[in-house]
Image (cartoon, helix red, strand yellow):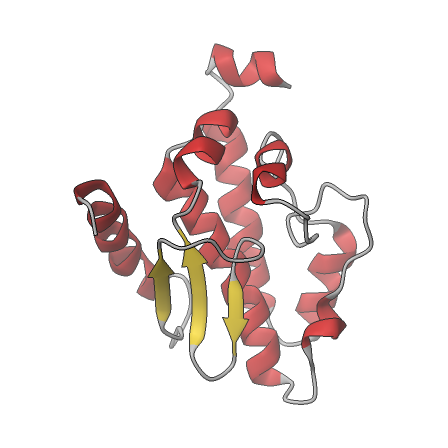
Amino acid sequence: MNGIRKRWNDELQAWWPRATNNPPSLIIVSRAIDGLFIANPFSGVTISTDQAEGIALFASIPPVQYLRVCAALGLVQWRALEQNDILVAEDFAHSAPSDCLFVGRARKCEYALAFEQPCICYGCFEFYHCLGAEREIVFAAQLLHSLRISTLGNPRAQALR
């Protein structure tokens, strides 16, 4: 693991316990994965540093913030799976097009556009809230809100909108 990725890993692992009560394992890989995260009720949440710098640069946020968002979204889905053992991956399918970060995208680079104005749609907020991930979905929404506030004074971020 190179120096910058090790620093991201250290920062994320220190932040992770504050995300929720009894969080699952957070696995950070450098290889590409489909989507922003993988949520598995047995192994935890997996996120990837692949293309993190490019997406974060495009969105005018620090790469570690991008990775926190990925982890927070994964945590939401993990909690829903943990609370509802009859759910399967297909239950989380989201219709496109939508700006919601829970929408799967064909290529990782397409998430850069979604991070211009990152959001969780009302349907997903209610869906995960009803599945027992209330604390986690609120946490993820607050994290996204903090990203928008932090870019308000950034002329580059305003120019991208």
